[in-house]
Image (cartoon, rainbow over all chains, first blue to last red):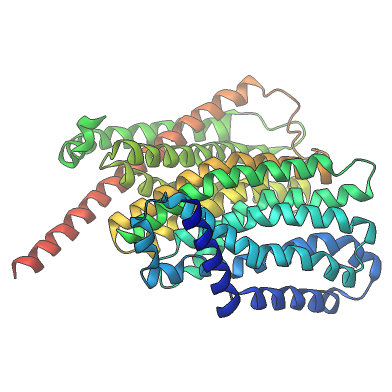
Length: 222
Length: 240
């Protein structure tokens, strides 16, 4: 079982790298935010410093959402998922591995790149490590929820529109605690509680998402 | 409960009950509105605008209850394969969404004279708004998928995931709000509510709840009719 899952992980990573898993599009989205925000709200550095962490979270969140429909749709359409349901591996684990592949190829790179880009918005350098930590943790939850949205709309022709309304409300806890971890940095309290809650939310998503993904995909495959 | 799984039995029951339910709804609303608009006193702080409460608070309660009902019906559908549960959840969603919208709209109208603004990013307002989004997402799933069985399965998942994550969202929104600003807006008329207002509020809440279930039954009835229509049409195509 482990071998099969590892092979699936490598396959998905290779596919994302060769065929463009959406990382490029997502990255250019974040770049667009970084360029357009100062142009739209003015180059006031104090204002930008206050907004920077929140804006980077927002752009990370929306960028991950952009790639959500790629996680399952292609494999559902070409019958790959059909074959995978017939293997001995539990389908929930297949969904989880595909989500992990999405995290490794899209969300994690974005989470690593976004904080330094925040420096262009006058992000406090002292907040950088915490933002990194929060984004790496939170990005896994974002991937899990994106997979959930992707699975729920996998068989629909125009699922992209639906994903945003279905998943954005679920992103709210991640956004709130992700941002609060960095804003705490400036204050007297430590960022640890927020990071721990973020971790807890990620773990809850880790339980729910593969189950729901597998159930939704099975419904489409039937 | 399985007894009412048969749509014919349910329809018979619904047809027998509905006139009485409508009657009760009208009587309760008449009593409640009379109390709300005429007998109940104006608030010493908020004046006449406090009367919006009698519409606003029950609407918010029913909106939350309707989501709970929807999730419960979805769970029943998933666990017991109850044939009417999916239809019940589907029928509850638009009604609940309307109550949610009503709560938001009346709250906004109430907020303008009280707080001087149409909208405050208060924890309760924000979570109500998020509830509205969850309703819309659920309804959108039913709209987007044509095949009824598939739509029911996917909608179940959406409702159940939403009901699991809703408490987390509510908790985080409240936490976020206390971080940004102290809870200052919701201090209506002191800590306790006067008896002369309370009974009116309770009557209105009962009326709204009953209205929800009456509308649910009407909607469920037409849902069953739509199903039957679809089946008949398919059968007609097959026999041709």
